[in-house]
Image (cartoon, rainbow, N blue to C red; front, side, top):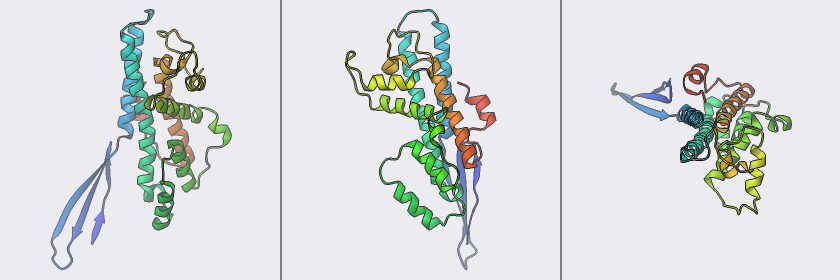
Length: 244
């Protein structure tokens, strides 16, 4: 006989497994811990954003200086952490597939997920997969082109451009120009960089870091409303740890 009990505590799930050997009456208790980094990643992103905001206030009115490197480093870390939080979130939902998709035969569900897991799947497509498997309305064309869906897609484009950075001559920009156009008007460019392009440097400012966190959280809200799921980034956590 085997019983399973799940107890979720903040960022981890503790799973005690109680087994009794037949005919012996001897019980054996083991426990498994499943870590979650969803909120931790977003909390790190919010912290980096606040630090960028402090640096902006400290150096208000100053020209470009050594402090800008710290602004840039924190901004890069924020983008990576923010995107990682959303991707960890949807991966967690797919991992807990029998809980996320109740009513679907486990064997059929396993086959579906195995088929879709072949090759790389963009995070936004994974969120669409969750909606589809839960038989909930997917993001329509209008939603995909407006806040927060389009902003989160732009956030992941920025993450990818930083992770797989490809240089371009200043007089022959193509991909840098395209990404700069995607980011344009979403936030105020850096006051410390005198460049018409937002990418690769002009985006690093508190306006961008605040936009990234707020867009990610707004996307999570919209997704959860569509999917009929409880909030992962709850109100108390947002008030105490996720202010950008």
